[in-house]
Length: 280
Image 1 (cartoon, rainbow, N blue to C red):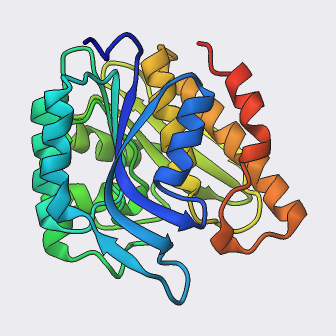
Image 2 (cartoon, one colour):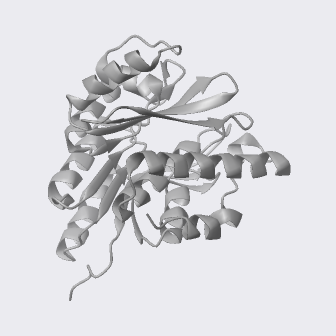
Image 3 (tube, rainbow, N blue to C red):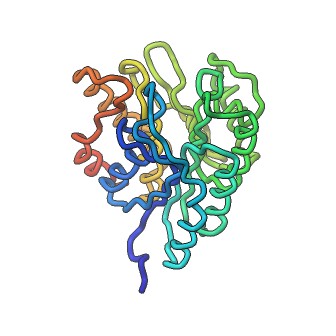
């Protein structure tokens, strides 16, 4: 039996029952853009870690057998997206996933979720951040924020980096594997900027007005759209404009509804619009 008549995307990330982020974001967005999502959980949370209390189950012991079942089904993936990883063992497992399931036609997107504002997240150790570099040779597209780009290259964090310094940063990342890089969420006054780098092309900056404070799951919405667009053949700079515009739209709606920051982006009522925009 051939299960590979449709393009599909594997997403390796945690799952949260409440608080829109991670797999709970990627699954509906990819589906709305016409791509079945095959989730591989790294952990299961009752609600994400931005809340004061949460219940969680580490899925690491189950990931190998999970992948073995997919191998028996001979599944193939048009895209692979990786997000938050919670331990060095999970880095090893994701590296194994790439070796087993990546093909010459697979779009691979690594979102190296490690920290922000110049600091590692509390759940991340320096050793784990160092191990993240092992995934870069497998990445076609890399979507770090500035903190993560600096950590991956050993560059001192400077929130005021200009375009020349950002290009140098991207070139250092490119030496480790990825040929397409988006440094996301650069603060530029009242705007947020995304710096788009593709090897052999001049960099492009994509700006959008900042809409309220940062909310949980914003990066997951962004990386899911980037992945789907890459599978569908949309050029990277156009995809970044698409993702940034959609994020700004749903942020405005979250502000109108006065949603708590932990509740994430209320993207559901806009999924039909993202579907209409998904053709390259």
